[in-house]
Structure formats: structure tokens, C-alpha cells
Length: 281
Image (tube, helix red, strand yellow):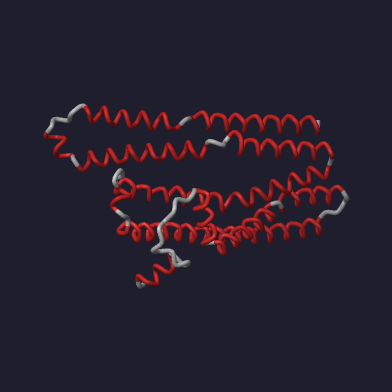
């Protein structure tokens, strides 16, 4: 593809030569979603339909039990089995289409980020790199692998699981007023777990990533200066510097946030189980 056409694809709004302004990660995530909004919309529809069809097994089981209890056997059960088989086959087709679309989105994310970095690196002003090491900054490109994996998990599992949870909670709320109160409490627990217990998760993860790349930068320098290190008979400051960087990385992980979130999740699960047993017991 010609360079001019490729630039128009990467920057459809014509902002290729504009000065890049600092943006928040949430804005960049939103921009990624907008760029692939059509495919993401199809993935959302396919995942939602697949989640609804996956409910055919428990519902059909209940129908079979009711049919046998009513004294009907062969013909209704055959019809129900055929409907369930058709629904599950259709759900499998939707799952395959969803996986194919997710793979396309992952490839586009990788290609788009790589091409944009290649376009911008030669145009960076040297004054902006006075305190930075450009090869170390380019290493951040490997975070795209993390983005690809998380994108796939979110697009494949979250829509169907969310729809199934909402349907289940709605049925429970319609069954009894006590269950309605239980559903509201569970939703409050989930919101508290996400927005209160995990509020510092992003900052912790960002700081941890920065420290990890400092370790990688130092190890790259050791590989680049391997001959001079041998000539100096392996000075001890190399191990001291490595130990200092590893210590900073370990301290940046701050497992308090993870432990707090896990404690909240286990508390919510224990509460939900005990409450269900109390209501139905």
C-alpha cells in the first residue's frame, strides 16, 4: 500500500502531522473501540445470542422434568431434544464467528499500533527525548500483546457472562421479593468491589509496568556491553544495580490492592451462598 494511502488509513481525521497531546488511557481505549466499532458491535450481538442459547440446556431440562411429571413421554421429549440440538449447533456457529471476528480485531490492533509507532518515531523532536532512552520507550510496544489477550477475553466471555447473570438475577427478582433484595445487595457488592476495592489497581499496574521495563532496559545494556563487562572482570556494581531495579519492581507490585480485591470477592461469594441457603432452605 502506498505511504499516503496508509497514512490516511492510520489517521482518517487528517491529524497525522498534528502535535500529539497527552491523553488518558481511558480515552485511548475509547478511541480503539471507536476504530473497530462495527466489528465490536457484531461481536457483542453474537456473544449475547450465544449466551442466550446456552441457557437452552437448563431450561430444556426443566421442560423435560415437567413433561415426564405430566405423564407425556416420547413425542414432546423428541421435539425438545431437537430444539435443544438446533439451538446448541447455532450457538456453536455463533461462537466460531465471534472467535474469527475477535482474531481480526486483534490483528488490526497489532498492525495499527506498529505502523503508527513506525510513522511517529522518525518525527519525534530530539528535545522531547533529553531525559528518555528511545529504545527503552519502543519496548513498550510489547504491551500490545497484553492488550490483545485482554481484548480477546473481554470480547469472548464478558458479554455472554454478563447477559446470563442479568437474566438469572432478573428471574430471581421476579420469583420473590426477598430474592429481589438479595439481587440488589449482590449488585451493590459488585459495584463496591470494582470502584472501591479496586480503585488503585490501574495506578499500581502502570507503576509495575514502568519498573519492569527499567529492568529490561538494564539487561539490554548488559547484553550490548557484554565484551567490556568481561574485560573488567565482572564488576560487582552490575549485580548491585540489578538488585536495586528488581527490588523497585517488587515493591511496585503492591499486593495490598490484589489482596483487598480478593478478600472482597470471597466475602461477596460467601454472603451470596449463605443467603441463598437461608432463603431456599
